Length: 73
Image: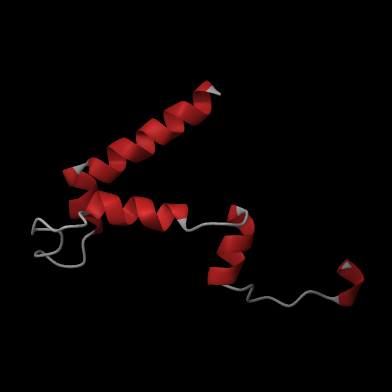
């Protein structure tokens, strides 16, 4: 349980970190204005969109590029 709390705290700290935003911005003007929905809120909303297991969500975003033989099943 403590590991989960630590992970959530680390994610929260990363989202609010200006260094994190600077590293992941597209251009030098990214994330510079104060908006109604700041970076941290948008990022949190995106994380909450995941409804299935992480493995399934990753597969849906980037399908397998290799083909599996019928003998695998």
